[in-house]
Image (cartoon, rainbow, N blue to C red; front, side, top):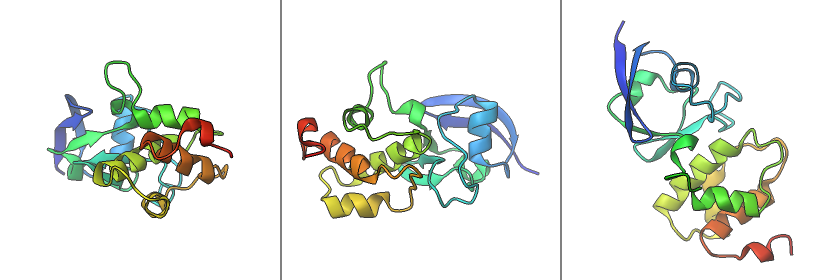
Length: 161
């Protein structure tokens, strides 16, 4: 059984001693106390556990930690810089895009990957890029608006009009 001893998480090398077959989500939450990524369905279908692995969104609940070894992992805790919220985080607040907020970290990570690939996505691009992230509260319209606010395509004052 292979063991993983270090992970690159949010720009830092973190020491662990984990069986390589354990889920990345379990390691993040239980061993590294990074609890922003949520356990939703456990099958990689809902997106609540989404993190970035070398810039690509992955479902950490179904990703073995061995697959993440030697790669750059970014969690929701890694979006803010020097205590300043990421523009997406600010936009989600402005658009009131959270109700229960359980899905929010996964939504933000998927949106971050989308904007890194396409800084000015159309509304259809946003919908397509966020496909697979489920919000049980149904705040999809506000989530789309938040992403558009973050890209500067709509003003926060326009939301809800």
